[in-house]
Image (cartoon, rainbow, N blue to C red; front, side):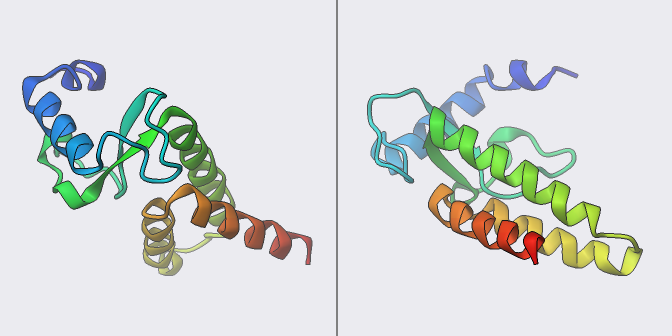
Length: 123
C-alpha cells in the first residue's frame, strides 16, 4: 500500500487533477488567482478505502496555495470547536453534517462562518 504522496504521483490522479483544473479554467475558484501554485481540494470528507482519483469531479475544486491553506486552517479550527462541544453519540451525526457543510464552502463563506462562530464563543 502506497502513502498519500505516492498516490498523488499516480497517472490516474494526474489525469483527474488536470480535468478539474481545466474545468476551473486553471484558476483558483475562490480568488481567481492564475499565477500561484494550484491545488485540488477535496470539498467532501475523505472516504475510507477511496483513492484520490475515485472522487466525483463535483467533489473536487481548484484552489491556490493561499486559499487552500486558509480553508484547511478554518476547517481544522471549526472541527476543534465543534468536537469540543460533542459529548455524546447522539450529536456525532449532526457534527459530521456540520463538518461536511463547512468543508464544502469556499474561503469567503468560511471566513464569514468563522466570524459568526467566534462571536458566539464570546457570548
